[in-house]
Length: 66
Image (cartoon, rainbow, N blue to C red):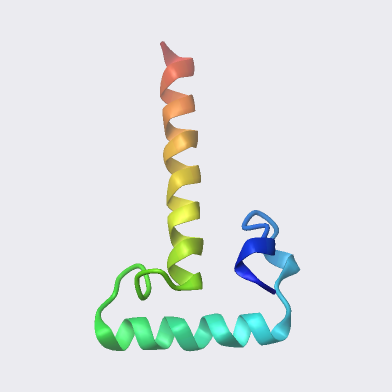
């Protein structure tokens, strides 16, 4: 799976090799104290995407209350 071809919303798309790579990135990030993964890494991009989606959903929810 290449970064340019990634559908961050389809987590079931990840193959076993990608999952193992993410597990390694996660372990390395924990050791080095990177809360959101190594800057620029695939893990970091996934976390940023998830955070952005959450912020959008919260903003949408807040605007619908008004």
